Amino acid sequence: MSFVDLVMACLGAIIGSGWLFGVLYAANAAGPAAIVSSLIGGIAVIFIALVYAELSGMLPEAGGIARYPEFTHGPLVGFVGSWGAFLAYASVPAIEAEAVVQYAEHYIPKLTGNTALDFVIEAVLLIIFFAINVYGVKAFAKVNTVITFLKFVAPTLTVIAFLFAVGHWSNYTATSTGGFMPEGSAGILGAVATSGIVFSYLGFRQAVELAGESRNPQRDVPRAIITAVLLAVALYTLLQVVFIAAIPHSALAKGWAGLSLTSPFAQVASIIGLGWLAAILYADAVLSPSGTGLIYLGSTGRVVLGSARNRYLGQLFRRISDAGVPLYAMIATLVASIIFLLPFPTWQSLVGVISSATVFTYMMGPVSLGVLRKHYAEAHRPYRLPAASVLSPIAFVVGTLIIYWTGWATDWKLAVGLLGGVVVYLIASSAGQGVKKIDGAAIRHGAWVIVYIVAMLAMAYFGAHRFGAPFDHGKGLIHYPLDLVVDIVLALVFYYWAVASGRPSTDTEEAIQRAAELRRQTAAGGSAAMSG
Image (cartoon, rainbow, N blue to C red; front, side):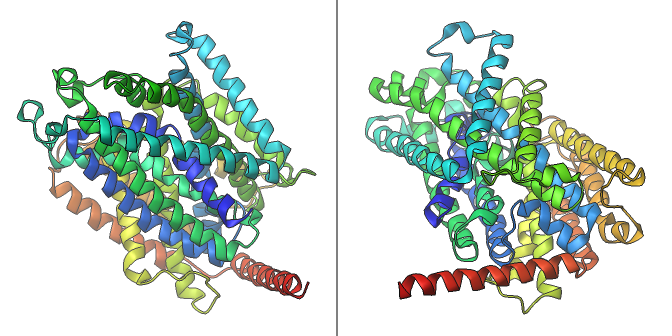
């Protein structure tokens, strides 16, 4: 995969159902101040993305998000990270299939309310995503690059067309709907986590997962991550700006929280006289989520592969097909994605869980970077994060805040999923099922992550009422904004505990040697091409 393929993989994951639905749910939560939520979400993700730009350049490993915690902290933290990544990744193809069907109701009204038929169509879509991925990496890359280019055109065209057509700029200050911040600063922060903003931006991880299949990963992966995130922040913020200004005053009789649309941009385009754009948007609403589902199904298979290489799974999941893909890992991904369709039948019901699980997984990155800087300071890094001693803990704090903003109703499900997975793994490990054992050293290096999960669950339960839709799930024993201060302090304590718990490992040294060999091969190939 080339640099362009990697950028398109990131953008293809970012520009999915998030832009089609996220603007509405962000406006519900924060009103016109949703544009601030969009910027905050983008800045937060940039901190995390820069950490992974260094990690993926230094150690370009397929399924890297599952591999880095194992390198620095051993099997307990490694398993928790990879299990969280699997839960987050495998659910995304499901949410994208749901988005396709929700917009397709415009063409096929019989889909409305027909849960059984919806499920069948969504499952068929997942099987199609699986088939394209299994055919081979090159086919996946080329199909995705074309689809992503078309996907990028639709939201860009929407921004331009809305700028010339909208006329309700007074929506930003109208007192009848609560002014610029109808839900206050807490509404702004809550929208970052629960409306799909973070869910969309986190698509940058595709370049990390596909690093092992990149043509020049140490050069191209960091550049692809940074490029994709900056483009996404600009695009999503502009989309939110024009959406707010396009809503007719009559639609806001119940305020921003009462605004209800099944196909936000397409319906608004019809209302303001852009019927031609509405037709394009309804078509893109099938294309955009499909492209994202295609990408995530592929990257989830690499997470399963990374877990198998860590020996959290059996040898079967390490097998690579003749087409160069982890076939059995992909089958496991397909089955899990179909299962996710069952308990979460709508887009909005799933997006908060995905966002929280994904951010939790990504917070392993800043910790791993701190450990690798400590024990392997001289290792080659094509991209070196400036001021890492400051930016890395900031990235961890940002992730902790996003999990807290998601709210109790979502966080308890995440905690149960993570801790339940740990219990199953401990049982399998002690039973001698061919998986890596959890010994005393693993517990010593990994105890922090279990305590962290419990502490974040306690914060969500005892924290302010203001977070988690509809902002009423905390017990309110720690009032806003003091709760944010407490959360930040806890995050810093856990970050430095986690870095202190890290250790050098033979796995890390072997990965560094593989990266060095890859550099030599790439340099030799470039020299041969120049000679030719």
